Amino acid sequence: MKISTFTVAAVFSSYAYSSCPLDQYTNYLQAMNESYQEAASKMSKTDATNYALVKEFVYFHIESNNLKIYSAKKLESLGSDLVDTSGVIAKFIKQQKSHLPDGSLVSSEALQLKDDPHYQKAKNDLQYFNSFYLFGFNLEGSERERWNEFSKAREVFNTYLEKTKGMSTVQTAFSKKIKAVCNL
Image (cartoon, rainbow, N blue to C red; front, side, top):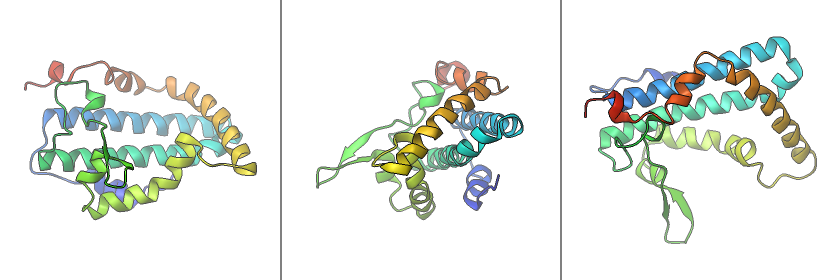
């Protein structure tokens, strides 16, 4: 699987200070990435047909997580009100929507990072994947059929994913409070 330049920059970028909550959030997303890679590797060896249908999704998911890591680092460094250290690890960055003057909704994260060229480029690069893999929006004919096949293959992929070593870390992040692991 090809790793983008953005991924390398996001994961290995260094900030002068990294807080415990940010470290926990980063560890959670990296554990998820490793679980996806492990499941994809096993699936590619035992179920090539379904793997071919989810391969691009795995790439999308890993890139999305790397963008979340990058965003969290930027938002924390900006002192953003989207950083939440009172909740669980997986919700370190609040998912809020804001109304634009035209009435449309946009994520508060996107508004706060609207001037960050790396964030904007990565977000734009992932837009098609986001629409297709997460929502299956506006699909007709062969695209709808492709999405239905993908959905079935994703269910198979999930069985591989559940068996990976890192999934316990990922699942814990949805229930463990940041305050339980960080002295705040």
